[in-house]
Length: 292
Length: 327
Image (cartoon, rainbow over all chains, first blue to last red; front, side, top):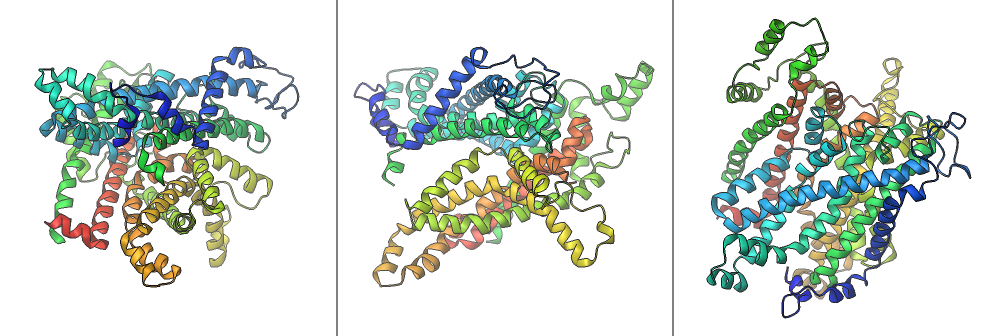
């Protein structure tokens, strides 16, 4: 990870302009940034943008095809699909961010402990990581959810609590290499406490790969949430989520293609956006990849 | 070599114990007791019969004792009886489903390998060409595609509109009356969509992986040597480079086991395929917790087995690893 150093000036501050100069060369990364920003705007402005109330039922327009009044058509209760997709973006992004926040927190904490203290703490934590990786993630999530109320908070916690292993491995690897570096040794010689060395000296230098994995993690969490909601054990109707709109699409597959087409497209574009952004950041941070 | 294999197997034993431990914790630390499902909704259940039920399932014993008993039975593949009305043995229920899931996963792997390897080679040898760029876009779409959405789209297009393929199950209603050839054709028709859809996600990652492997190998000195002595580009790529680029493939195949099995929940449910994933989904919906625990343990054990197999076969095909590890 020699690449990170390049973005620091002599005082160790992150040089955003240098990062940006490399990042903007990556067209796909820029596309990803655009998608992510537009989505954030849609989620924030949902009340203004959505043409109808997402839970307003219109008995006269049940399962109507996309038209000028209802761009994405209506569902079997006569609700406007466009409005539901717009409001669904709030759910998806909320779940994505909080789940990844939880996963990153756990991963950074355990990875830092393992990498910094080494020895038995390291073996214990890393064997636990190996163990968790044995479980097909989706199985684990479903098993836990089966015994909880399928509320949005439970979904976030469960997705987060089953998705931290990659971050822990990353952070551990960073800590292993950074803790032998001169600046850490000098901090220790000056009598800095372990907590201070970990949080002020090593962690800031280890965050770049974490940022990349968190960005990609948002995409993964959104996919997982939508799959859970699609299966009926995620976000429960009437709260609109892309996954549960798709459930309606499956039930009316033969008569209403728009019910499954638009929310799926929304998921695809969102996940694509975060993946492209994550890859863009990774490429800009890692000079070895840039040479290719 | 033998000592390496034995060592790997011994190392995975503690993991196996850990798997049962985590499965047990996940289920037991979750709020709500398994018997509450059978008793809470029934007003006629007295406190005494509730206690009797708890005793029957051993829930009145301390947690460590419960775990020890359950883990011991799990190792002998005895997960008790299902809570569903049929009350059958969990092991029996899983055993009749597992071959379907494994068969599907193997087919998916086959499809992934057959398509991804050529794509990877071509886009590596023609780096930055139109082909490479369009596969890059395909890869990003593949990563972002929600499998269940792809399944719905395919069902809609090929099943409903074009009517080419059946959209659910593994066989038609009249399967028993079909001739031998008809049976095979019928099976194949039912399998095409689930297998292709299931393989799609892995396809993207795998072809990407193959590409970067190939790129790494063709920059090595021995490839330059092969070119320098005047071998044709064909021989250099397909005889010299490909062999080494293919080595890590076995590892990735082993590591893709949890993804394939876990993904099975979604598309087995969508396509109504009676595999382990569908059983798991049904058990989750009805909180049939002996079955949930059983599948959790078996799914994790299969993953562990996949990892082990990947590790051993990698050492088998790559002498460099073998020598390094035996030292």
